[in-house]
Length: 109
Image (tube, rainbow, N blue to C red):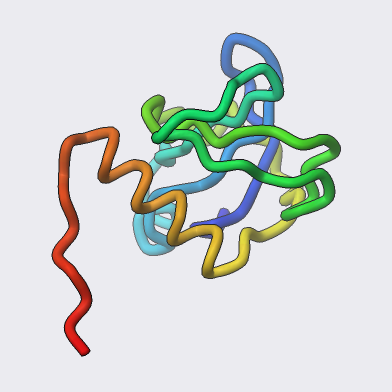
């Protein structure tokens, strides 16, 4: 399991989720940190839109970055649907920080 990958996860129902935890943690721990996705979520500050086909998702959905969860690896399908682009993963990271009330420092030129 790799950071930025999308897998099916057994939560309230089977849904795609983005692996958020770093690769070293994913190798060593018995669980992983995820951001669940939903097709019913509406546009909000903490939601990142994932287009149909992007990272292998079968239909358009929203990454619900305010619902970060730690789940056992046994809840996650072994087969990776796909990988988010670095740009989209950065959007997810910033939305997670925003949901936690953390303002990232501005990039310096």
